[in-house]
Length: 223
Image (cartoon, rainbow, N blue to C red; front, side, top):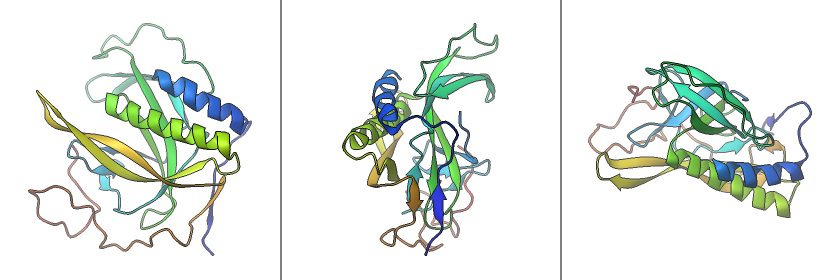
């Protein structure tokens, strides 16, 4: 039998309160994971400082108690300030942004998820975004989880696959946006179900049309 992935936390809010917070607070739009996960400018999901590609077909269990919102201030490729709180709380109050912040304080939302199959099984990752596409993806995910919890509070954990969408921008051309596709819902003790695909190392993400097929998914140049 597969090992269990259990989400732990002290003084967790009631699932019913979580449902309300996910719907109301994310509409206005921290716990920190082991790695940072994001979508790069070419539409690939990558994580960590070495930009490891997410294995195609992997499934991720979303920790429903990890949703946060708040603000972040960026300098030249560095975080100058960050204030994040659970979505069950109001947005934090802000003092003036750091002097060198390029855009001042930016609204940011995020959450944590754990990979439940494939090479990255057990990896905990944090996704956070200030972009319109990223915030919309999070809002959509939060709303779906909220609506499901209203029906079944016993299975609040969304199992998602990581997908992409895109739109054409008049200045930047094709712009990729993240998509969290819900596969199913499970209880807080998330077991790698037998129907989850058992991924092999050769199951690679090969979406860049002009690039030769890589021999490994493990390294990409940072974007």
